[in-house]
Image (cartoon, rainbow, N blue to C red; front, side, top):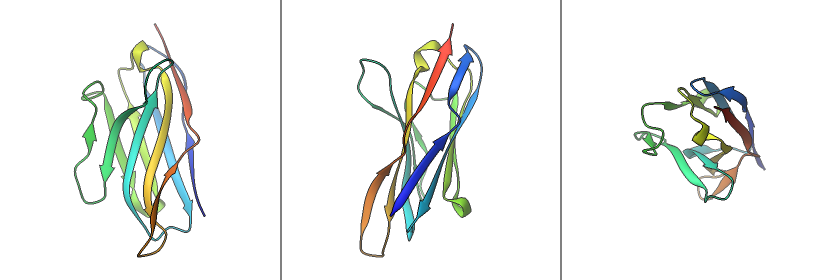
Length: 120
């Protein structure tokens, strides 16, 4: 059993900053990828940042230069530092991780989602 718990969403003024966290716990053998998504009202879910283990972090063009994703492997936790927030960044942000529970098996797990609201 694996759980992902997110924290850090909220309301911020345009130009402000927020930091999201996503902590994985449970039967974790290793983590393959860590991802951040967002879904705005009436829009499709968008991949915001992807952190493959041992690879380079990739960002959506819409957040490059403003958002920074990072990870603390010892804590099985990833972060999303969001700076210079814009009203169009308003969305439910979710984390996802591809996690091996044994050397032979892996699944994709989701956090519960956290609301980010940016006022103009």
